[in-house]
Image (tube, rainbow, N blue to C red; front, side, top):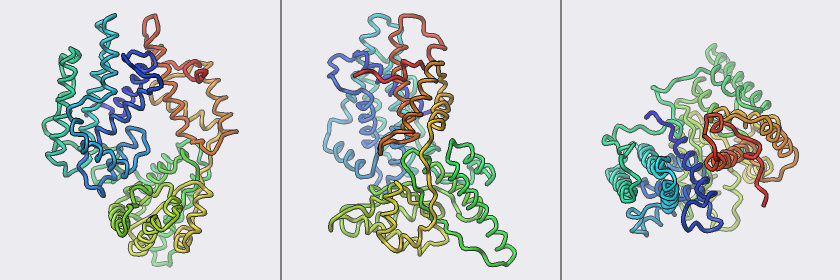
Amino acid sequence: MNYSLKAEIDNCFMYADAVDNEGYGAGTAKGIRMREMFRFDLIQFLAYLSSSDNDEVTMEIKFIREYANYQFTSDKLRDFKYERTENKDFPLTPPRSLTYFVAADLGRQKGNPNLPKRSRDYLRCFKLTGLEFIALNSDKSEEEVGRLTGYCIMLDNYLKSLNLYANDPSPLLEKYNALKPVASTSNAVTETDTVKDVDELLEELNSMTGLRSVKQDIANLVNLLKIRKLREENGMKQPSVSLHLVFSGNPGTGKTTVARLLASIYRQLGVLKKGQLVEVDRGTLVVGYIGQTAIKTTEVINSALGGILFIDEAYTLTAGKGDNDFGQEAVDTLLKAMEDHRDDLVVIVAGYPDLMEEFLSSNPGLRSRFNKFITFEDYTGDELMDIFKSMCKKQDYVLSTDAEEYAREYFKLRSESHDENFANAREVRNFMETAISRQATRVVTCNHEITKELLETLTKDDLVPAEK
């Protein structure tokens, strides 16, 4: 497919902000954020399509997190699926956010019938997202295909009834079985993937902004593994190397990205057979019933064999109080699996520095197996600025001189004085998204010709928060 799904969804987020800020949607209630409404409707749609068993939703969770930019869990997905089951009218009712897109189109076309119809882009986004979502499941059922087809036909008819949809620009594909999973949501390495050697992977790591100590720690680990392999080939005793790691650091410091690179490096060095990264959190492992957490955790571990199991916010597994918390059951199952599969499983636990210390101290078995720390420091102001400029470049935006000066000072101040909720690169991403939304509103409402320069330039006004 010759399109970027991420771009399709991001465009709808951008249009949603423009619709909300201009009040195009008739009856828009004060305080309603169209962006969040669109996100909610998109997630409801995906939950409606999902027919996976409760214990087989890891890929779907990762898909929603990546494309909807929402910290989703398996428990939330089950809740959404239950709500859709209860609401029999869901497949017959257009999403609420789409009705606002429609109201905006109808209002704007009175002044200029030739303006783009954003509701068409909305429908295209839902179709393409649905296709990619059901393609995640290699055993997709006719039920999933039928739900997607029926829902999209309902959306088609809704727009056609309003004269907003003369021709369908993205007809539903007939051969669903030919669909392949979205590459970016699957970290499994197959024989058909482009295989990078260790030097290329290290170069990719070194190209990341900041992370000086992390890069050095990974390089030292790789060198040790190389020597270990050479000694093995020469019949010599091998030095002990702990492959299980603790990634200690605040959010947004690149822990997941580094873990993904490390999985590929381990594979290239022959340490792991497959080199996939399975990313989970408490919600993926813990169930609120006796005995079920062990079953669920074991299934997740089995999916990670031959690769790395990455447990984000691992401290939440032991932070529960009371007899009804089953996080310790997940920990006990994990420790046994690490012993049973010592040659075929690597586990990385990640989270805030202080809380990870508490996590390891909660069980002697954890401390003995996780004795290698890699610390991810917060980004400096200059590093945050480099990340921001990189994001701009990747999305074809340029900064005006005053915008660049403002952003540099803004990130300097944020890095020097921030609270515990500071999210590093994630904060830069949010800053970028807000700037793009403001720029979209500025461009849409301008009274002169919309040029390429106007479309690509972010000004200081796009970056400065509005006064409340």
